[in-house]
Length: 224
Figure (cartoon, rainbow, N blue to C red):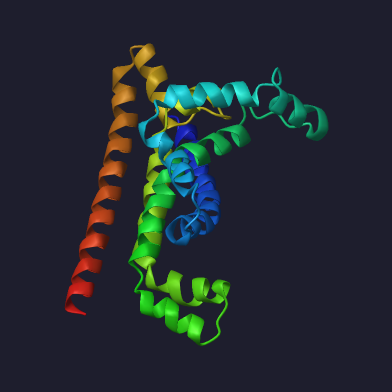
């Protein structure tokens, strides 16, 4: 059994989740509290990967990253960076594709914070950054954990975007979903079944963890 696709998949999921965490907190904070007129457009863009076929998103990212187009050509010419069919390109595509799975739980977590906590912090003269790091984030641990788990698990199962942007290069971009596809194409169903079974079990355990966490937090809030 080749474990390299599992290693690449976990590496991709970890790196993607880390970037999503750093991007998702300020973005979700802005979406939760901003009263800007164009907010609904940003919300729609963030949620677009939920309804857009992965092959469509992957196709446009492939065009954008290609050295034949201005963005890919700019990166290639001035930074000697090629994103198409590479692991860094795969990470950027995964961040875009999994963005709603990080941002939406965080946005809900920010909204559910009691308003009096924010008002009290402001009355005490605390800055927005201090209010965020000392008041809001510690009170939404459930949302933080749920968002990280969902983003990680969603990245683990990517196929269309990964295939379009990363190709299917062994040791470079061949993650577990592509390894399953390869085994099916080769009619090696036993190996495909093994890969798919492990991914299925992992996804099931992740969902159990998320639901247990949610039930526990609801119980704590109800008792409290």
